[in-house]
Length: 277
Ligand code: S5P
Image 1: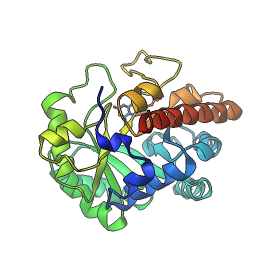
Image 2: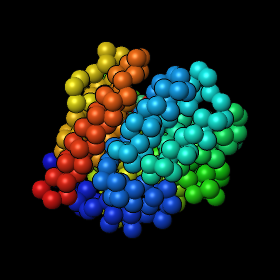
Image 3: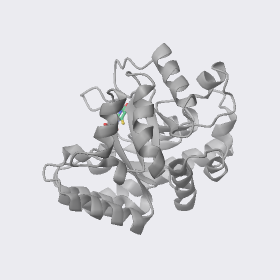
Image 4: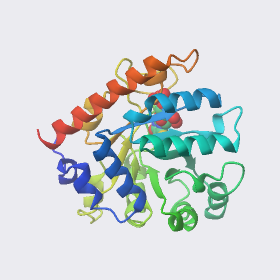
């Protein structure tokens, strides 16, 4: 497969392609920590949540959360998460998948018990509502220097986010370059962007559905390896959850740390091979 030019640039070079503060920070962090790993911490106890993040912190550029799955959420969890982000030098991505009218998503992003915009550098949205989902979120997130990812494709079997839907998602991103920093997707979107007349616009691709030891979870999830995702498909960040902490029960922190190190090594090698084949 022929990859476009952005896939051959270093993360440090690409930081200069973005005006958005969160995108620049993420790329600079990836370069500094030599890591394109994002760990998705989908556990339900706050103590496990913090233990996993403490263990993987040194190896990641980004921590992805589903803050609403914590059974015992307290605002102090956010303080602990933020402090670990400062200690270990990573950014935070709340995987909220907003998908409502602009007014509602603005409220969901700023308010309620989670106040996502106040602590999450990056969040994401489905494109099904059309551009108003982006403008609604931007009215809250842009003044805070936040960034948004659009779900252009999904990792699940039978996903409807393909073809014209994916292409329309790319158009929505290109129409909002200050706030939209890229996609959740399985491949680069540069050829769709070029077809839409935006050949020179860099956008990040963060990719879930990454696993070294399994091809699926029996619940619709499909896994590919870091090599397939980063080197062959040109994606920028690998998002790994259960590949690192298993089913989240009986956490073995030393094992979680070793797995994070393993994914970080594989992800970085795939990137090195991609930029200097
Ligand atoms: O297409 C997608 C988009 C996302 S954000 N497929 C996904 O799996 N995700 C998220 O990535 C999902 O919500 C979960 O938090 C993570 C994958 O977790 P894993 O345990 O399967 O690695």
